[in-house]
Length: 391
Image (cartoon, rainbow, N blue to C red; front, side, top):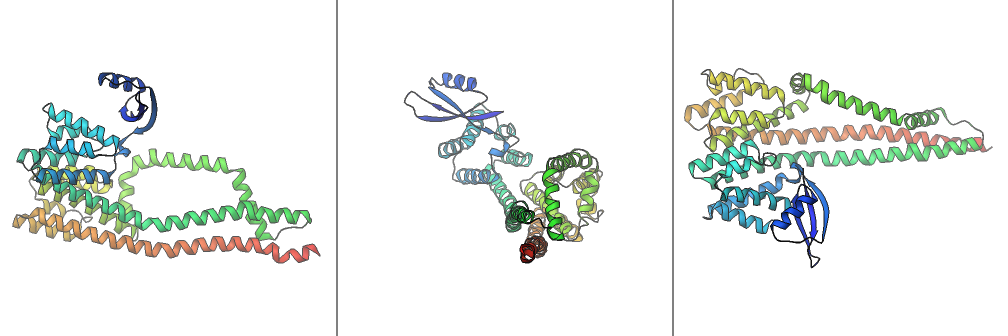
């Protein structure tokens, strides 16, 4: 596990370096002829340190530089000089060093498989074989832009409901654990009983306080059991029944189909064989039910069936996909048809997501309003009865 380290030279200037340990830092600096006065530890460098948005920018820059006539080594060195993120400097430097030693770019990228997907490396490998590396980077730019667009749509759709839920939970916690107990203390000082509904809410809150650790432990164990036992054994069945959920199932289906045909469109445009593209689609999709369908389609194609014939065998793949793929096979423009399918399901996914948010927000607000309204009633009931208690 590599980590970012800060080291100071004899002039007390701060520098950054990535290494396995402080001893590794000293060894690297010794090889560079540098002396460290002080070494401090920074963040761990993991696959999450390399964001998809940053990879998109680098891919787009490489496409532009290669199109301008620069070599891949020159392009990478320019990126290293301009790169503000030390983890990317380290990664790009390592790739450049491997290329200068005679390694191909695709092989160098595969050494960092947690950052560069198998599809990314395959498309680069095709670009190296055909001598059109800049075209491969342009195709990857389109692929990454679509992937980021999907992520942004989901984040945008969930941002407001999650904020509303967070604020509501915070208000509920304050009312249950701070406001209501104050009324309980006041009533106790007058030796009076709280209204039944108010006492019921306080009893529930007290039970949550007392059994909080047990509840948290039970939730954690339930999650672990579901994640590592139930999900592992029944993932295929669960993913299949997810598609039957109202509205949510349509969103999952459109997202899966968009991912499948987007990967196939990119691989076909790059000149990658259909079976290789299907293999890449199977690895990029998270839904096990669709992944299983793709694997069965690959088996059918290997046995001599056409792609459109295999698509028609599965009800989970709409007739629109079958018709467009069949037209693409007949006309020799399969890559164009696959791209059209991708755009169609991308638009459908966005529409369905917007509809889900529009349907979910009123329901969420109604539930939260009911809970908060009940708590307000529980608070005001003692106030209404306070005059009788005092008298």
